[in-house]
Length: 353
Image (cartoon, rainbow, N blue to C red):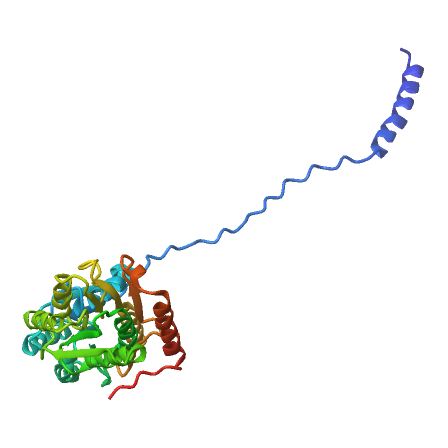
């Protein structure tokens, strides 16, 4: 190539280079942005040891055995039912056959000294000893019955036994064929005297001509004497018997040994003991009372309340023996039911001397 052509070629390259230099400037790739998220540091503290829930401790003092089919067993089953509901939150201990006040007092004081929350002395005979010991242990709740005198840390429970007694008296007057019925009572006090008075008024409401034979053994646990008195009533013509307290089992057994004799029970249904003899029963719902005392204690109320058992509150119930219920005339049952409703409504009030 000559010098002239080389110059021409160079002249062409210069504009091209200029054009290239005037083109878009490449944009440099931006470096990636890294976002750092702050994660809070969680410090796991060792939990403080939890204090175990306090177990509510109940002690029951019984004058007879827990399976006496009467006064003592009815309360035992009531406390046992509450224990089954509360489970491990409740501790339940029972001491039975403590009819002697001295022995019962020693047991009551021992339970209170061991920190029991509620000590139930199941009998009106324990009233004085409960009152004395309660002063020594002001942080413990005590209970007794049948009674109405309370204290700062004493509950009294009071069955209105005359209500069921009235209805059972109606049954007695309507079912007797001889025109004679018999009562074997323990003592003239507590729910026993209430029951007997109600029973006699119920008899009179149906037939005032029916003769009521009434005796007392002088004790709650005179089993032999109670049976002898029941036999005496039957020998005199009574064909319906009744009675209260733990000795009532003896009355039921005596009635079962005679044909054509009915037994009417209180405290507890004894129809399993004598299915061909026990016609009906008034039963006590003690679990309602025990539940109430525990609730009050936990709220800081250790006593001072009289707990009433009656039909209006459902703490008393009348039950018939299914095997013998069909023997009761319908009109008689209707009269008994009406009396029950009148008692609940307050229309009928059984007067006590």
